[in-house]
Each structure stands twice: as structure tokens, then as C-alpha cells.
Image 1 (cartoon, rainbow, N blue to C red):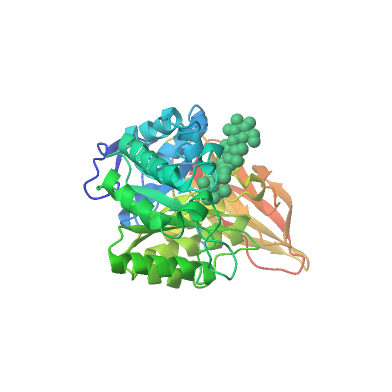
Image 2: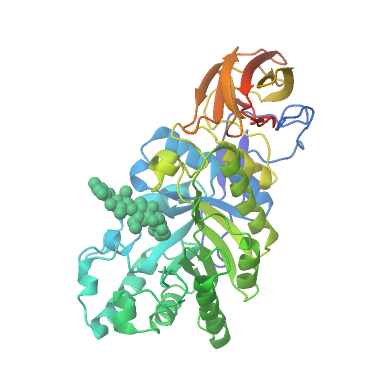
Length: 461
Ligand code: G3I
């Protein structure tokens, strides 16, 4: 099937031609795709999108990821990137130290690799980042105020000029506020030498350098309503009141158990949007696994969809194995590029359904249905029937997620593997003729919790 995915671009930004991508044939019919969570008989609409980017596009949003140039030689990385995302942010390649490590010597090679790959695939690109205290080469910190100001202008001009027409939105200034209750500015060479006005100066310079791209302020721990987000809010309100050019605010959204998705996340996005700026979720990752991680991801997506000026979501990496927080398995694909429960919850929250596995083989969708079988005082058996759609399939897999302290103690009729938490079992099986089915089973030790397992979507391989 040839697929065209609409890509949102900044007004006036010359973008690449719409992307055409060949995917494995996937027939989406009411009977061909079922995403079941512990119940039988639910079907998905025939027109539901089967990838993150298509589902997001159907909602008028983009769905992006951070991209590392040095991973673009890895086949699974590239196929997952190409199949699922329509926006790319260079994870490190456009930072000051990467582009101008030595004063006056600009190196765009790695950034260009990301931008060229993205544009060849019809993806939009977010620019990250121009003015940031981190990944800033030492020579910048040694400048006096006058030289620092002119070097800041020069850097903005050269970098934005190089990528002019290719970037939908730039993170002009990144992480300029301190954590904590003060709402104060973070110390940095820019802050200490140029004073409070440096952010405004940077935005004005950026608008001059490229009037046709969106200019964003980007930060973390600003996802809920708190002292830090209040300080950013006051700055944006002031900028809008005085005509300082700013188009968007990025909410990084790095979450874990110490910093979960805040309950007022949507309200916070909305109050910024009400200032007249776009809001974007720019670096989303959520540590965890299984259903709790999936629920948190879905909540983030729902919050963005509920705010009309929330124009897109970027997750901070393709696969857990290359995440900056890889130990926390915070992304949508595991280290083997399997779709995690969080992937399916995001797709579902975006209104999509089903989805192939991103690989090249197979042919034809499959469905799953769950039923509870035997039950004892301390355990129960579950059965999942896997059925091929209108075409034969060469293999299938699905996930069974139990809720801690439940444990799966036995399985039959399939090949299981486990995620790090032990709560998510991926079950794989072999070929099935068109319309044929097979059933696998498992025993859940309840350990006091009798809730049914969550069954992931069936994907072919
Ligand atoms: O490429 C070198 C490699 O040659 C060397 O052997 C290795 C040894 O440490 O370092 C490698 O560079 C690392 C680079 O990531 C690429 O992997 C740097 O040390 C490491 O500091 C750098 O970390 C990046 C971090 O920003 C730096 O602040 C992460 O990849 C990147 O995900 C992270 O992204 C930031 C956003 O830009 C801003 N918001 C927070 C977010 C997470 O920290």
C-alpha cells in the first residue's frame, strides 16, 4: 500500500514534497483489525490510521521523534523512524558545541544528515537549539558582553541561515529558568553577561535571521502549573504584549515516578495557548513499562488533543536502547524495536488502530481475542485466540500485560519473551493461512489482584 502522510509546516516554510512510503500490505477492515483489552468483540473503524504519524495527521497534529545522526545506518532504527514519525528533531547535532565548537568554524555535517533524511522522507524538522547554557563550548563563556552579543547574533544568523526554509520551528532559547520555587533565571554566560534581556534579544535576532520559521521557547519542569512555568508564562505574556516575536512554547515533558505527568498538564498547556502561542510537546519520554506507562502516555496525548493550539508531539528518541534515560525504558519501542503497550495506547489515543510491525515481511493483518478460562483461589488461566485476516500471515505477535504483583507462571502454544519489569509478555507464533486461527494460553498468579490482563494489538511478521 502506498501511503501519503500530510505534514504540518510553518507558514511560508518551503517543505519537501509529500512523502510516499511503501508499507507492507495491510488491509484495515472492521473484521480485520481488533485492538482488544481483556474483552472480545471490539472492532476498529475501517479507516483508522495504523501508524503514529498518520493518526496524528488525521487529528491535525504532527508526531515526531528525536533523531541521532549516527543511528541512521541502522536498518531497524530507520524503518521505525520512517514508518511511524513525520517530524524529526536532531537530538544533539544542531547544538552550539556540535555546529560551532571552535569560534568561527561551522560544521553542519551531522545536522545536515538528520535534516536530509527527514526531508527525503517528507518529515518536517524542529530545530534544537540556538541559545542554551549546556553543550556550549568553553570559548563562548570566555567572551565579554559585547563580543558575546555579536557572537550570539552571528551563531543565530549562520545556523538559521544554513537551514532557512527547512525548519518548521526553532527552539531559539532552551532552559533559561531555574528549577524550584524562585522562578528565577538560570545562571549562564548569556544571563550573567547580557542580563535579563538576552532572551528577547535572541528572539529578535532569530526573527531577522529567518522570518518564515516559528520561534519557540523550550523548557522542562514547566509541564504543570508551578513557579517555573509561572515565570515562563509571565515572560511569554510580556513578549506578546510588547510585540517581541515568539510563536510557540515547547514543553519537554520528561516524566518518571519522581516527576509524573501533572494533573494540571492540559490546563497548563491551555493557559499558554490562550496567550496566542502554539504549544508543542517537544521531548516526551515517560519512564516505566506496561499499563501504567501506557496510561501516562495516553494522558499526554489526550491533553494535547484537547488543546487546539497544541500542534504536535515529539518523543525523545525512537527506541529505549538509545534513550538518554535508557535504564528507565521511557520510549514507545523497546530495544528490539517491538511496539510497547505505550505505543498502542498512544496510537489509540490518537484515534488510530491496529498497525503493522514496521518490518517488511508478512502480508495481511491479524486479530486477537481474549477469554478467561479456569480459575483457582490463587491463579487463573487466560486464552488468546489469534486469527489471520483475509491474507495468510507468516508470523504474529501480541503482548499480554499483567498488573504487579500479578505474575505469569506458565504459558503454552507460543514463544514468550519478557520486558525488564516481567509484567509484559510478548507472545509470538508462526504462519497462519487466511482466516485461520490458533490459541495460546497462560497462567496468571494473582497475588491478590484478580484484574484481567491487557492484550495488545496483533501484529504480523
Ligand atoms: O558522542 C559522544 C561520544 O563520542 C563519547 O564517547 C561519549 C562519552 O560520554 O559522549 C558522546 O556524546 C554524548 C551525546 O549525548 C551523544 O550521545 C554526550 O556525552 C552526552 O552529554 C549527550 O547527552 C545529551 C544531552 O542532551 C546533553 O545535555 C543527550 O544525548 C540528549 O538526549 C540530551 O537532550 C536534552 C535536550 O537537548 C534538552 N532537554 C533535555 C534533554 C535530555 O537531557
